[in-house]
Length: 110
Image (cartoon, rainbow, N blue to C red; front, side):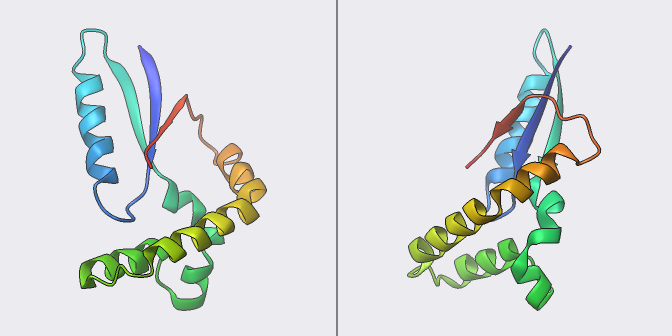
């Protein structure tokens, strides 16, 4: 049996559903995969600066903006988020490496 970890997040919607659909299809194959879903936000909560400051996850704020239709600034927010990821990249890699779990090959959804 082949192992696969699908990494997803809940910002914007659809990522979790796509990951779950892919998991279902892979597990129903003639030679099934052992698929594990990994919500990356759960691992990265310790470095979520928005959560530290407000008690709410960054993804929750983004989802609120989408629900309200306040999307005018989302391109600028995306650039800010990408810069934050670059800044914290070494720490993110360490968190993934030290997650205490054996993580097989990863498929990421963006």
